[in-house]
Length: 160
Length: 116
Image (cartoon, rainbow over all chains, first blue to last red; front, side, top):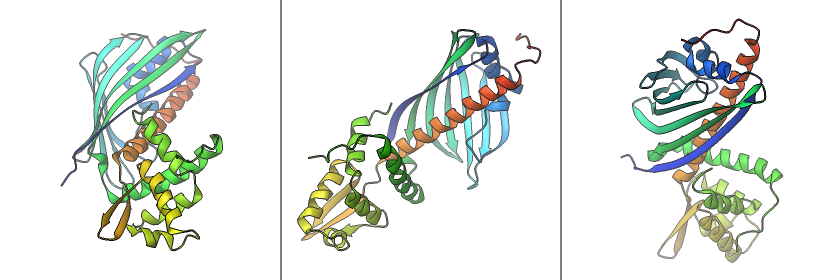
C-alpha cells in the first residue's frame, strides 16, 4: 500500500554568463541548442526528447537510469517573454509512478555585457518514494554529508 | 530553501555527536531496544536515554514502549527523502547550467542564429 504524503520545497540556482540575454535565452528556446546542455541527471541515458517552445507548448524528455528505471519529464510552457523570462510547469514520473510536480521560473537579467540567469524551482514531492533501499541509502548519505557540513559550520551545542 | 529548515537544524544538531551517529548507524540496520543500543557504548543506560531524546527531538529516531521494553527505530521521514531529492534536483541544475555556460562559450564566435 502506498503511504500518501506531500513535501514542498523551493530552490534557486543562479549563474552569470558572459553572453548577451538573447544568446542565453536562445539556448532555452531552440531545440538543437537546448539538447546540447539539457539532459537528465549524471549517468542517465536520454532516449527521447521533444521541445515545442511556445506558450502552451510541450516539452518531453525520457531518460533511462542505470538501475533500469525510466524517468519521464513532461512540461508545458505557461509564460514566455523573449529574452527575459520563461515559466513552465512539469510532472516527473518514475516508470508509471508520479513522483513530483514542479513550477520552474527562468529569469534573464542583463549584467554588464553578460546575463544573470536566475532559475527558481518550486516542487511538490509525492508519496515519499518509500523504498527501503532509498531510505537506507538516504541515511548513509545524510551521515556522509553531515560530516562534510560540520566541517564548515561552527559546532552547535547539543539540544538541551 | 526548505520549509523544514528548523527541523533540519535539530536533525543536524542531533547528529553532531559521535555517540548519536553510532546509534543512528546501528538503527539504520534495524530496530533495537535501548539496552541493545547501549551495549556497544561505554556509558550508562540513562546517558543513552538522554542521547535518544535528542535524536527523537531531531526527528531521526522514533521509539515506543511495549511493556518494559522501549524499541527504537530510525524515523523514515519524508523530510529526508525530500531533502535528498531537492539536493539531487539542485545538483542536476547546477550541472546543467554549467553545461549551458560551456555551450555559450563554445558558440561565442559562431554566426548568431536569428530567432523567428
